Each structure stands twice: as structure tokens, then as C-alpha cells.
Length: 326
Image (cartoon, rainbow, N blue to C red; front, side, top):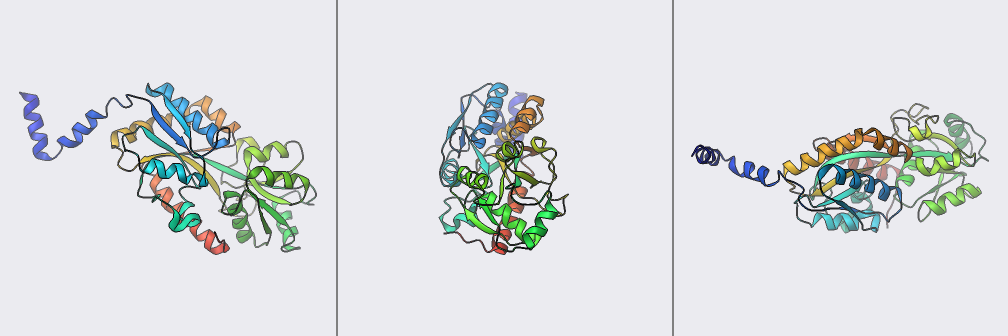
């Protein structure tokens, strides 16, 4: 009787639907969960996605299964997730390419709204870039490089992973903030770009820390600065560009977990809690350090604000640099 009276009071107060929804989601998850990844198997994004899926599988009582759906900078997979039911059984490993850069790079062709079609669960890590140069460039630090580049405008060529990539935007932001002019040579991916940099056919590049560190440790390349405001453990001796004379410089891609819009708050919080524990786990931190990643555990309250601010910042950078997309 008391339970019925309580339910009647909750109905009268308009609270029963929220209570019933919370009860319905209390056992989440009750079946395997799909984590879609917009990268091919074997890459850094895929490796990170599998770390997340494995951790959640071990701590939430159900399997979290990675499904690779590469193509169009992740926007194909993101569009698929946006159309799925908001029940917590389809998640997406979001990144800069398909969220904070997507509207600028794809325009009207983008088949979803990054801000409105998703529930933002948590931002997990940032992926720093490192400014590397061929050994033939006669400099040992950032200020020497800036002076050298200013003495020969447009004569230095910088490689990028492709037009509109984080590698490209990092270099253009560097051009703008340092007052230098380098010529852009776009490649189809990091592999061919690094190959030409090692051969000296281009002289400069913003590469991922994981890739760049392999060659700076052997002396095949020189590192001049990392692109985040914090130093990266994998290149702990390399200063940030911010501390080397470019105050406030920060360009990085990022990785976080989202779900279709309308995900119940109880499921959002359950996932956010486990993902927060993921970023604080000592063994996970060692693996993230080895991948050249920086933890940024912004949860469901801060993540949407980050998306809004970063999208505006990248849009301004693209306009200021005069970058055009076909």
C-alpha cells in the first residue's frame, strides 16, 4: 500500500517517469555493447579504442566490442551512430576530424550535427603533435628555427597528413603565431609524409608524438617542441611550443566517447564513472604514456562546452589561414 501511495505522489509531482527510467537502466549493460571506431585496425585510434573497450568489458560485466568503420575522416561511422537508438548499446570513439573540424572541412556535405545528434559522455585524451625537422636544418631549438625560417620565407616545405588534417592545421597555426611562411606539401596519410621528411625532400612536419619519437630517438629527425600546453612523457625532454616562446599555442586532436542523442542520464553517468576510472588506472596510464597521449578527463558536463569552444577556435584558424577545402 505504501509503495502505491508513493508512486501516486510521484505521478502527481511528475517524477515517476524519471524514476521508472532510472530503474529500467539500473542493470545496464545487460548485453554486449558496440564501440564503433572510425579508424582502420592497427592504428593508434584503433589501439586506444580497444584499450577502452577491454577496460569497460572487465569492469561493467558485459563485452564492449570494437567495430571498425573507417572512411571520410570518421564521418561515415559517426553518421551511423547518430541514427542508432539511444539505449547505450552503440557508442562512438569521437575525434577532432569528425566533430570539431567536421563542419569546416565537410560543410553542407556533413550528414549529422556534431552538437545536436550526440550525447557527450567524456573527453578522454588529447593527441599531441611534435614539430620535427630534418637534420639538415641548421637549428637546435624553436627560436633558432623561427629566425632561420624568417630569413628564407616560403623556401621551407612542411609536410602534412593531408589538407585539413591536424598536422596541416598545427603548421598553419605555427605560421600565424610565429610570423613565418612555410610552403605546404599535402600527403595522403602520415606514412608517405614521414618517408619524404626522412629523405629530406621536405624539411619540416608536425607529426604525432608516437610516430615522431621513433625518429628523434635515433637522430633521424630533430624535435623542437610539442603542441600541447603540457609536456608529453614519451618526449619528456622536448619542451612545449608554449614554453619555448609561443604563449598559448595548443593544437591537438582528441579522443572521447559519445552516444546517440537522448541517452538516459543514468547510462551516461554509469559510463562516465567507469571512463573516469579508466583514465586514473595506473596500468592504463602507463599504456597511454607509451602511446604518446595526454589524459584529459572532461566528463559529460564539460565535454559539450569543449566541443563548442574547440569548433569555434578551429573554424577561426581555418579562416585566418585561408585554408580551402574542395
